[in-house]
Amino acid sequence: MQRLANKVAIITGGARGMGAQTSRLFVEEGATVVIADLLESEGQALAAELGDKVSFRRLDVSNAEDWQRLVSETVERHGRIDVLVNNAAVLVFGAIEQLSKADFERALSINLTGTFLGIHTVAPFMREQGAGSIVNISSVDGLRGVNALAAYVSSKWGVRGLTKVAALELGPHGVRVNSVHPGGVDTVMSNPTGASRDELAPQYRTVPLQRIGAPEEIARATLFLASDEASYCNGSELSVDGGVAAGSYYPGLPGSPI
Image 1 (tube, rainbow, N blue to C red):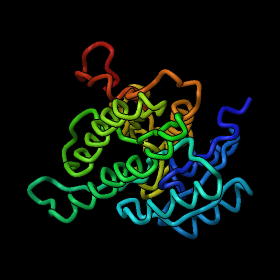
Image 2 (cartoon, helix red, strand yellow):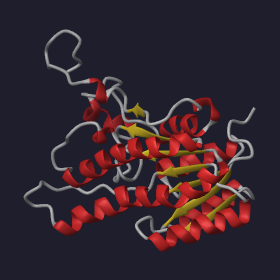
Image 3 (cartoon, helix red, strand yellow):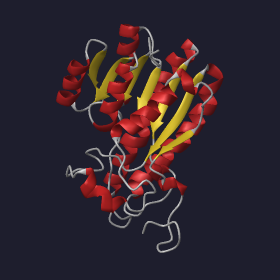
Image 4 (cartoon, rainbow, N blue to C red):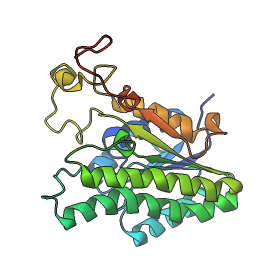
């Protein structure tokens, strides 16, 4: 049985990377999917590839009017919204002393405000339905600190906290809100040069599973939380990080690969 049969899903950042793999998997599992992204050519091509149950809509996740338009059009066309995946994000590097206010705010506006606006806009419709699943893609860096990623880490910790509040407020109305925390994943964001996974392996020696993750591995976790299989999951954090959040190694001691 298809796990998302007869469900309507919006996936932000759905044109490439983890979002594209999530779009593909959701369609395989029976969902009607709205790919929402700023990457118009890639999003339209993916929608055409995946067939009649998929459409593309341009969305700037930091823009409240774009969200209102997207959600209204989706409800008008499909009659409901069962799943929202807040996946769109940017990665901003820079030490705190060198990071500009503009770059810090850019990361927050897309990663955190974009997630807030998604929840804010779909919540009334899901509450009226008495059902829904919101999956917020945070990061393993929403569970820890990382140097040179002050903006990104701050935004992803914010997504984690926002998930908890939304789970409390929407849970009584049958709407579940959970977060996924990926580690390094083989996408343009984490692997902009397109290096092979073998070439990347030395960079992942401190990861217990000794490798970078694949987009489909994150998509499968998102599918679980979106589906009725996760019917008693609300406010939960699902780490899909190869073991990074488990802890760190003391090099040279027993059990350490480094």
